[in-house]
Image (cartoon, rainbow, N blue to C red; front, side, top):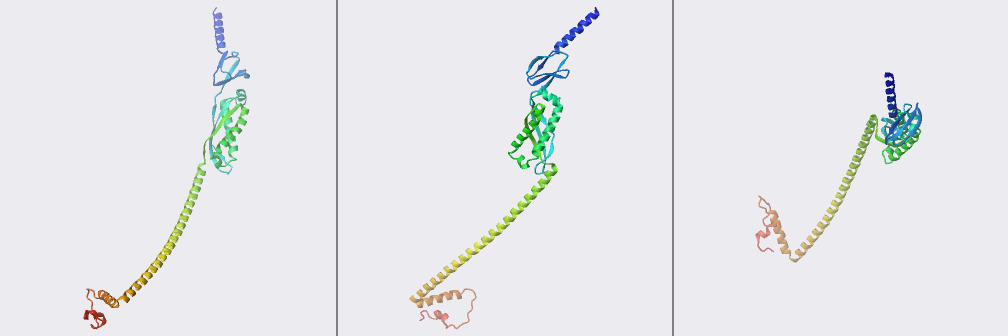
Length: 288
C-alpha cells in the first residue's frame, strides 16, 4: 500500500513537471530555437505561448532588439602615416537566430567576434583616408562605408549591422605634443612675419609722410616767398608813388621813423655833428 502510494505520488509529480515543461513563452522582444538533444527542431519568431515535448526538448532565447557593440579604443595609422586613437561603437540586430547560434553560439562569443570585425574594418577603411577627411563633412560617407563593409561580413553570422559611429578620435599623446609644438612654431613664424611686414609698412608710411611733408613745406615756402615778393613789390610801388606825390613829406616821415627807431628811452649815446642832416628837424621847424 505504501509503495503504491509512493509510485502514485511520483507519477503525479512527473506529470505536473511534464505539463510545466511542455510549454514556453516567447516575448515580443525575443525569438527562440527549440532543440531536441542539441539538434535544432524549429525557430520561433512569433511571440506568444508555444508547446514542446517535455523533458526531451529545450528552448534557447535570443534578443530581437537592437544590441550595442562597444569596440575597445585602438590606434589606427591613417593614409598620411599619422596615428589616430579611435573609439568606435556599433549597433546590430540578430536577424537569423539559427545561423547566429551555429556560428557564434552565444552573446559573449558574438561580442568578441563582432568587436574584432569592427576593429579590422575600421583599420581597413581609415587606413585609406586622411585626417582632414575624417574631420570634414565627408565623415558621414566614411561611416557609411564602414557600416557597409562590416554588414557584408556580419551577415554570414546571422547579424545585421544597424549603424556604426566613431565616438571619439584623438591624436596619441606623443603626437599631440609634436603637433602642438609644430603649430606653435608655425604661429610664431607667422607672427614674426606679420610684425616684419608691419614694420616695413610703418617705415614706408613714415618715409612717404616725410616726403609728402617736405614737398608740402617746400611748396608752402615757395608760395610764401612768392607772396612776400609780391608784397615787397607792391610796397615799393606804393612807396615810390607816395614819394613822387610829396618828396618833402616822405623825407620827413622817413626821418621820424629813424628817430623812433634810434632814440629809445634806454641809455642811448650818439657821437655825431649836431648840425648834420640827421638832426636837421631839431634845428628848424620848417626846413627846406
